[in-house]
Image 1 (cartoon, helix red, strand yellow):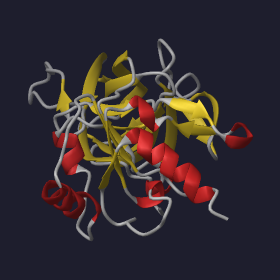
Image 2: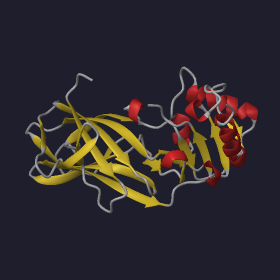
Image 3: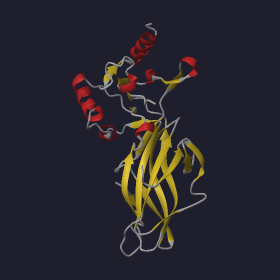
Image 4: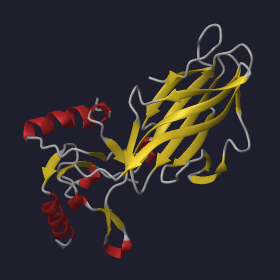
Length: 259
């Protein structure tokens, strides 16, 4: 749930209401690979249950969030807010409040990615920068600071949707979003979290592959579980299967050299 800093207005309500926070909203550009800090060993029965709750028809990311897992390298967040004052308010900035450290290497759930009519503002944050600025996206190219040139004005019950991308190639980062709002003649802050938890992403450990490609270095992880595009044989794409990381690398090489 989103939380707001205390307001000194008569009704003690925040200047904007957060109607929707949807992490992983852009499924085509959000990786289904997750990493955890702890090395976790699961047996076949446990993996079957994890498969059902994460990959099945009704699968979701809730299990990963409960275990403080971090998504691979980047995430997308759909945020819908609406004005909550009789007089027009202005969102003057959106910031990330982040804490970053070394990438996670305890357990890897490896499922590398394959290749709306509402008015939507698309923003990008590079969490590898010391003070990430909300960049305006044209396609998937950042085109300068969005709020350096404009603000977003909202009347009461008028809403606005943002699609926010955040990425890191160097760190594990947990973060929240802070909306700076000018209302009641003063600047206020509304904090947005991932339903009470921070948003979490982690860089993957990588190595140079054939032809100069960058591949995930799965041998850096203590436990490895593979599904989807990570299953090079294509026989078990719909379930998590445990691999010894070194054996996975050897088997993958043999598979692609079989012809």
